[in-house]
Length: 200
Image (tube, rainbow, N blue to C red; front, side, top):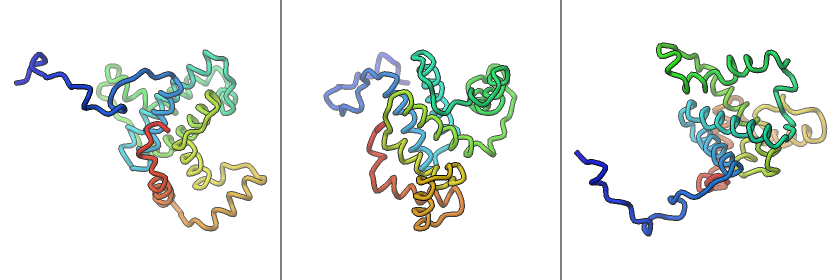
């Protein structure tokens, strides 16, 4: 059996710069969490892993926005009564996240994850916009996912010039389901080699 004292330290000369842990700030942490969730979505990784990254980004951005007094353009607190907001987050939006975090409270519980892909998609769109509100940037991963959501859910877009442009562009893309839209945008992801861009 190998003991901790027997493990040979890794010589940092043999590690690439991306393998060596460096300091990060809230902006880069958020960017990396969202990038990881976007990568996982297009790679069709485990939906629980996508959910954890997405919700961790949400918590980070919510705390950052509150601390910095940043007004978020999309905020459920603008639509849900204050006395019901905590329950709505806990019992619906964050229910899967809390289920994964708190096994000590409900060790024998089970969770229905049949709609988790849809929850992930909407929350990932939301946290991408939250990141933009907080840090005034769109990473390539965030921009790609926002475009995927706008193309695959045109019913979300308000009437106007942008909606007309999206409708025009949609004529050249044929997809009728989430898997088909994912496949179409996965090709865009591949062509742009976003998998090689850590958190960009």
